[in-house]
Length: 139
Image 1 (spheres, rainbow, N blue to C red):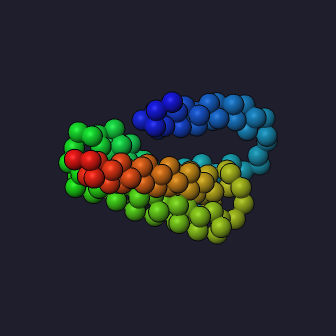
Image 2: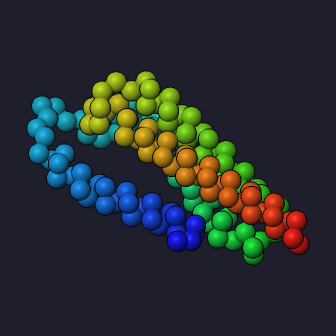
């Protein structure tokens, strides 16, 4: 399988996981469900969005490594790596400081999403940097 399909495969895996986890989560009775955006969810959600931005930029740059200049590819790769590291570090910090589990309003799910997206973003950015380095040697 090509690396270009990694974002699509990751998104499909997340959707399948959510689809199978929803019935199991629905059977658990909660006394007080927290809904809406709480102060504990805001930081991890924004951090997950930063990681998602890195995944999008890294995926687009990976698909265009041969067609765009090496300087533009390297800039996109650096943005992907930096945003991935921000998502990974802050997601880890939010997960470590969150009290309670999913559904408590403390942002643990957003923190885990930020960590996963951060790792994917760093890997994609690293692949783009590696390919642009090899492209500059060949060309």
